[in-house]
Length: 111
Image 1 (tube, rainbow, N blue to C red):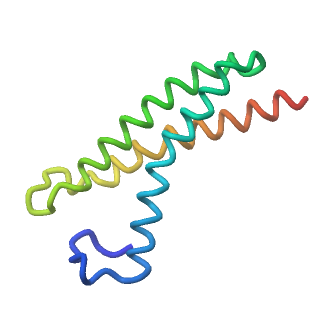
Image 2 (cartoon, helix red, strand yellow; image 1 turned 90 degrees about the vertical axis):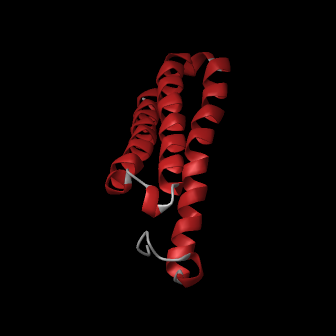
Image 3 (spheres, one colour; image 1 turned 30 degrees about the vertical axis):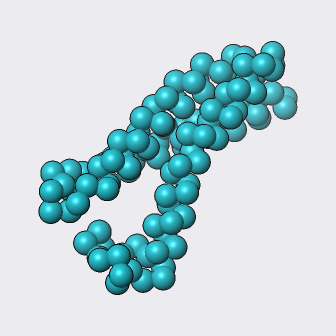
């Protein structure tokens, strides 16, 4: 990843790929959760898991929106520049928790 202050026209190929891939991944995380939520609501075997999915999906969506907003403020005006890593973790952790709980639930249902 290139430093945050790197001008757009001076980004490395690696930094550009990292930025684009990260943006796509962050966009897809809440979408994935809500797609599964739709399935969990209609499938009787997964209805107990729908509340975890709904709660973590809402937290994830809010986290991604806040992180996206905070990371797009120009650096000179960004009061949150030293907290970008924290905001990024707030956007990542709910998704990772959901994936862990989902995987645990899959294992439990297979037994």
